[in-house]
Length: 383
Image (cartoon, rainbow, N blue to C red; front, side, top):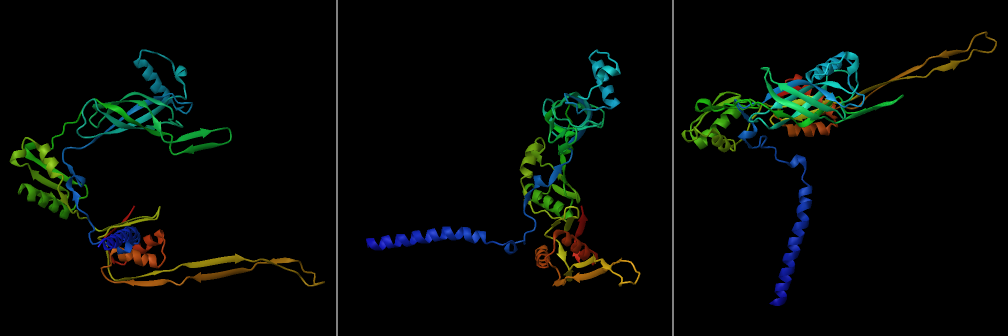
């Protein structure tokens, strides 16, 4: 019995070892064409596709002065006037000749004040030159207020500017990388005033879809009603109105925390986005193609000049001349004509386009032609 048990154990060990070796090989052999595209839209959480009405961010802007530049600042009168005004705030009176400096730049300041941010918290700041400054590298922003559209000050900004580029110049050469005239100050603005948010007034709130769609709005309403009862209803493609349940009237945050975890399968309009500048093509899985034939071919025309010298005969009294000869040839590659059946999916379209050897820019032209033929059932968006 003992030898038999040893032999059985060896067989089991060999079987497990072969399974381990075979598993990665099988996984590596998976082809994109064999993948399952039946589920075009995965299930996502409600919180990832909606915003709560009334809880929004606000834009802030301002004008400031960046100091400490190594000769790369403004030379415009605007910078001199800003410096003069700044010094007057500190009780220093100077003339324009005393404030001439290339180490100062007038900049525009922009920031977003998110919802639920309270006084004392910090937000990021974007800094951009307004004059003819060459670079903000090494500069420091002096204290400047940030205002909203109502003219009120909501934050105060200050700090060193971080620039993601550089510029260097000599007597005969100049080099630069990225954009040195714009930068950021992480956590560079301190919030001084918050924006009140009332997203559950009167025991009711509304959810705003980032991508409005009637089907998605109805699915959100159905998911909420299945858990809390008949409290949600879509008012249009981009808004779902929700009545707070009785137990959550005084605790809307608790209701949102429980509701936003619900998962639904969103739906969108079939769309194909193309960018002719970069040759980028993005196709949604819902795009359908009617019965159509696709042909792809190239026509090459070459023109070559072959001048030759013509000599006159002996004692003819003629002169040597140059005779122009032009050779024109046209070569048209054999076009590939492939027919696609009705209700072709994106998966089939990609396979056909790859089969005829088309480049991304050719794909854009083919898609535009299919759309003009009325066979592309979806929106063709040119970015």
